[in-house]
Each structure stands twice: as C-alpha cells, then as structure tokens.
Image: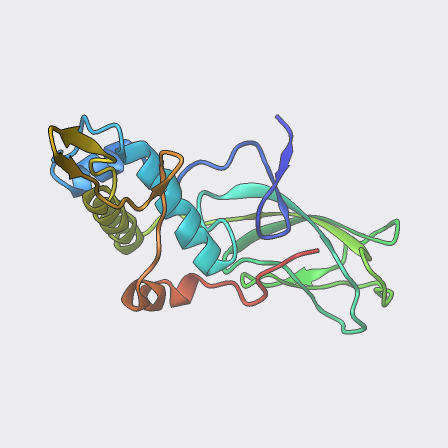
Length: 196
C-alpha cells in the first residue's frame, strides 16, 4: 500500500473507502434499491460531497500524512475533528518527540517551527466510526440522487420525441447538499480545512 493525496491537502495510507457500504445503504432503505446499479456510484458521490463539506475524510480511522506551512504561530493545524494519534512530527529535518496535540487537529511542537512553506511533516491517525445520523444522511442523499438521475436521455417514436434532464455527468451522479444537510454536518467540519 502507499499514500494517496486527498482533495483536502493531506495524504491517506491506502484507498479511501466510501462513508457507507451498499450493505449499510440497503439496511437503511429496507433493500428497496438492493439490485440497482446506480447505488454504488451514488454512494461514492454522496461520500465525496459530505467529505468536501467537512473538509476532511471523516471516516474510517486512517493513517494520514500532512506537510504543513509554518506561519509564525506555535500551532500547526490538521484538517480533522477527530485526530486519534500523533505518530511522528518532523520540523525542518528535526524529529519532535515532545509535541502536544488535540483531537481537533491542533499540534503544538516542542521545537521552533520556522516561518516558511512546508515547514513540518506530520504523520497521524484520524477518523471516526460513522455515526448513525451520518449513515442516514448519506443514504438519504443517495436516494435523492437515484430518484433524480438517469432518466430517459432521448427516445423517439414516429413524430414523438422524449428527453429528460439528468443530474449525472458521464454516468456518475452529481450531488448537491441542502442547507439542512450542511447544518447536520457542522460538528464534523474541520477547524482548518486544508493542509499544504
């Protein structure tokens, strides 16, 4: 396995799975769409939208690596609301074993951090088990996506032609979160949403 760059500016070790599985989705929806081929692409799109709104991967708990800038303050911030361990901190080539850290992704090195770009490399673990309200939220987004997507693209018979607009692009559903959904995710939104 290797590290993969996320859209939020840090790397995760291995692949980033969707927030919920098709089994979670089928349980949440009473197997209503159990054989629908649109479910997994919609789960992936909904997972990406939720993660983008939060500014980090949220779940599962993963090994992560971030390269962060030194801005003259004593704190370095990681995009997370649930940091579970600080595995290593390298500040300009110096291994810092005495750093302090908080669950919200704040790291306070015990050595001075220079005011420069890419001043520190931090390896850490972050992520939560997806709470039931987030499973329900993602399942609801998927249901909405399926209900609005993949209509008839074009059909004609004689002089009659039918076309329906879709919410998909290249076969992948697009997802927009509602204000209520964004409010439900507020507690998971990263304090600092972008590493460098």
